[in-house]
Amino acid sequence: MRKGSLRLRLFAAGAASILLALTIAAAGLLLLFERHVERRVVLELEGDLKELVSDLTRNPDGTLAIGRAPSEPAFSEPLGGRYWQITQPSGSPVLRSRSLWDGLLALPADTLAPGEMHRHEMRGPGGSHLLAIERVVTLPASLGGGDIRVAVAIDHREITDAARAFAADLLPALAGLVAVLITAAWLQVTVGLRPLDAVRRRLEAVRTGKIPRLGNAFPDEVQPLAIEIDTLLDAQEQAIARARARAADLAHGLKTPLTVLAATAEELRERGDAAVAGEVASVADSMRRHVERELARTRTGISGRALPPQPVRPVVERVVGVLRRTPRGGDLDWHVDLAEGLSLAIDPQDLAEMLGNLTENATKWAATRVRILGAAEPGGVVVVVAVEDDGPGIADDAIEAALARGGRLDESRPGTGLGLAIVSDLVEAYSGSLALGRSALGGLRAAIRMPGGEWPAALGRGGKPQVP
Image (cartoon, rainbow, N blue to C red; front, side, top):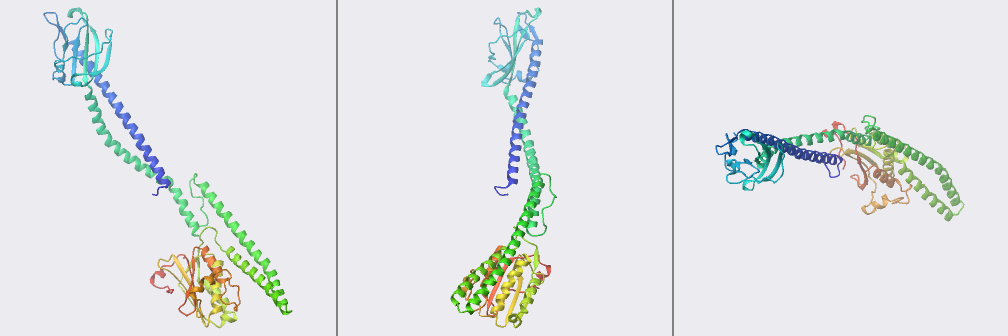
């Protein structure tokens, strides 16, 4: 995926959203778990406190004592992490758990009503962080009466350790969930963008001429786009058709005046006014060149997309048949060697225009022979059609002049000098190229390279001719 890919953007946004949501969820779960553990610990501490109070007795000397120590072993282990302490407001001796060793719980000096319970977080033995609860208990007369403060505490590290253990179990599960959700996000993006891939594939099919329009086989969200594209293609084709029709009308409208102008120039020449006749003929010839050049350019059958493959052989045979009926073409030896099934992605009229100009030029210059070859380059993607003759050919340094507008290498020969230039324009319009050089027959070789059509399987078995 490229940096500007819509799929990459959607996937990145989805993955980032998943990671953010699960990070927040993980933090929330850890906080909730820790609070849940704290509530459970507070309930345990309340149970220990009640157990302490229920086991209070009086010594023979009248002092308070614990009849039976709490069942939690940590209360008996020095710095065991759980502590209890009983004090009297009057300053009587303090009772405390063995786990406090020789220390005391530094309870805050707050005021508690009888039966009220307070919760504290404070420093404990060894700098530990304690969670403590305390309660004021009014003793019965059998225990001497009066109020006592009973406190039970636990090292907060136990809660923290429980939360860490929960996190250690939670994080791998969340990692697996992240992988599953990101995979699901990728599938969602892929499936969601599949209609756009279908639009791209069908546009390519329209461009290559396999289908005329995109059609209606798209989801509701994409269908308006397909409709607009089809409407645009319709409008473009109609505009091109109108432009070609106007060009044809223009050509027909100008041909008659130009013919009259040429006849007038000839009459002036016959009357002896050669200078004026030459100027008129030159102007008429220049106008004819421009008309034919622009008409050929306008007639290109390109509507912004590639056309269906067109067979080459019928067009070649039609062009050769016409030239053979001319006085010059009837005296030549014609040789056509085209691969079976050879096709070009081009408008038939434009193909006839190109081949007509090339073969007409070869007919004009050939001594005895004209050869037309056609085959595909390896892979069949590019087709080469070459027209050769055994005439004088063109020098390498004169090729550029031959392709120029109105370029004529021999002013004594008839013609406007537009043939090769028109072919070059048409070929370039179809993303092809025109190359001139020396043929194996000794004369000119004009070869066009253009995108090919679909090739039969037989062409891959050595059945196609070689284009030199």
